[in-house]
Figure 1 (cartoon, rainbow, N blue to C red):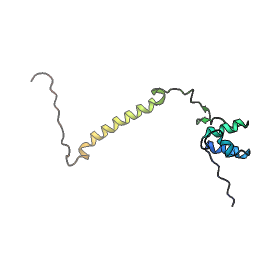
Figure 2 (figure 1 turned 45 degrees about the horizontal axis):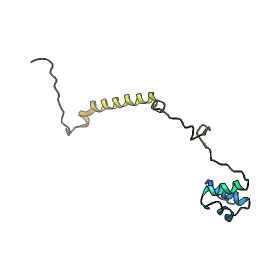
Figure 3 (figure 1 turned 90 degrees about the horizontal axis):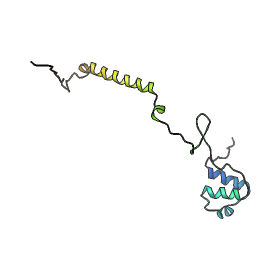
Figure 4 (figure 1 turned 180 degrees about the horizontal axis):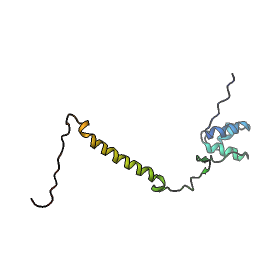
Length: 124
């Protein structure tokens, strides 16, 4: 059972590995900055004319490339599904009516005594 080498997904590790594969050393990279900075390795590879992916591309679920510069604002009506919001409101009202209808059965100890409200219209 052979183990394959661990592949790093960090961009700096990929740039560093590309530099090592091209026989470039840490000493050469130090002339461009810190060894822990991605920009150092980018400058090293660029100075020797080596090609690499300059910016990682972020793709959305549908496969299209997402650009931070062209991000679009989403308003509330695009974000909320009105049909589901209406169904949730109806379900909430139905649940409240169910609880109020069953209140005498679920409150056997009369923890909350009933409150009677009388409204009189006109004169007595």
